[in-house]
Length: 393
Image (cartoon, rainbow, N blue to C red):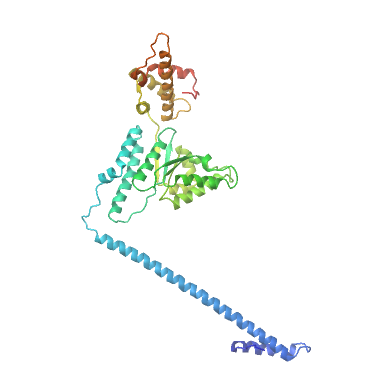
């Protein structure tokens, strides 16, 4: 009948045969033997399957051990190659000068431009120069074949509005691009509204789209603390934060994330999201400007627009700045920019009325077109008349 009784099944068969007497009489001994033999054969198959599974498991263990051995060998050879390469470098080998890299890559020009664009902010400029120095030295090491690793370039800018955070982020992107640490060096500015959706499934696509635009450059998230809402566990901002955390870790060689906002709120934000704080390696605080610095900023703005502030207008504007700093809605350089724009508007109205006056020949000189007079600036008296909560500059 094709059944095979193996030696291993004999013992089980003998035990079962001893029970034949207990089988009902309507069964024959022959049939019982066949059934018991089949049972023994099934047990044999189960043993065989167990042995096969054991063989497969043993093979997997051997393969994993071999994989680990090969990986250890690869690491050992890599280390040895590095040692051999370092030993081959002469002690007096030169990687080049710092000045050479600063000039060749245009980093010096960008730092000088930063000095011209931003008045004051000495601590900020010093920190930017420190980061630039790290990148230059890292490149010198790479030039000699020394081991280098991309430093953590994610940053946190803290300070009041109008203190130059966006300008510094833009210049940092240019420095990173010139030094070869980013592909494009462009700046993308985003807020909560750009990253967080209004319904389920909306946040991830919005966040990923902004990140995609910023890849190869710098992503500045203004008022980043609004991404997290501690009072609402179901707030969609948490999903955006998780995506950012992953990108900051996995794509740190192709994207620099800058988080910006007020210092006290940013500190609280980091306390809620410790993973974010650990990924940010550079914290730069932007102090408020002094009145003298704001006056200088106004002059720089006028210079860039090819205007001049009349000498007798400077004291009027300086007093305006000091008064404006004590009032609501003050935003440092942004307030100054708005004041300069209003002065330009009032100068345009003044020149237009003068040129269209009946007794005028309608001619306007170049000097008149370039000069902002005393009457063009809002005086302290005008400002006080508007009230302490006036929004219009």
